[in-house]
Image 1 (tube, helix red, strand yellow):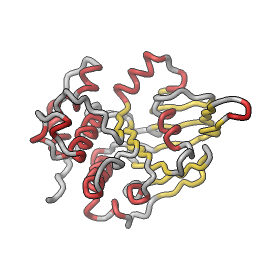
Image 2 (image 1 turned 180 degrees about the vertical axis):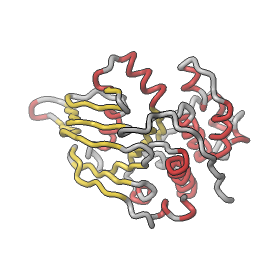
Image 3 (image 1 turned 90 degrees about the horizontal axis):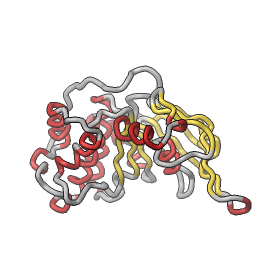
Amino acid sequence: MSSPTFSPAPPSAPTSGPALRTQDLTKVYGTGETVIRALDHVSVEFDRGMFTAIMGPSGSGKSTLMHCAAGLDSVTSGRAWIGNTEITSLGDRELTLVRRERVGFVFQAFNLLPTGTAEENIVLPLRLAGRKPDREWFDHIVRVLGIQDRLSHRPGEMSGGQQQRVAVARALITRPDVIFADEPTGALDSASGADLLDFLRRSVRELGQTIIMVTHDPRAAGYADRVITLTDGQISGDRIVDPAGPGHTEQGR
């Protein structure tokens, strides 16, 4: 089955400056001899409209970087910005609003409400913000992701791949500055995982979305435009992906 075609949609985020950046970001757990420096003065910028993969061995700090950069975890020192907003200086309430309205999340475990329908799960971030869905944008997303016939289904009535597509739609619905994807293909079979990565890549290329994905899978990273590698809490590699890679073929465009 051929992939659906994206039609252009106006971006909601500012087009100037990086979507996200960090400066000397440091995260330390424990004290004394038991101290663990999960992040060690990490400074990095993520351009708008780019698909970036963050890789590294277990304990390298890749998930910690995502959590701190997304405002899901506090930092020991250093600063982080989403757009022009310094999130490391915000209080809990302000940070919650930024995460709700300017950040999208796609998790390996889907994190869907089991009692809610697909449609209810997709529009949940808008409901929490007291906003009504833009029906044209909603219809566009579900059409692109091929889940029009699953909107009345609950998660238990959908396959893993369908649930993950619902999770992607939920992340896109607010037109966020950046989407963070944490091992998004980890619970999927290879075919469903490839489909999902193709949708993520095309949302970057054709909708201008910014995506930062944590993954341990080199094949998944091959769909990205850029791969950052962490080792012992520091950036040990930063490269642009070969455009002839698996996600950069005509099928992935």
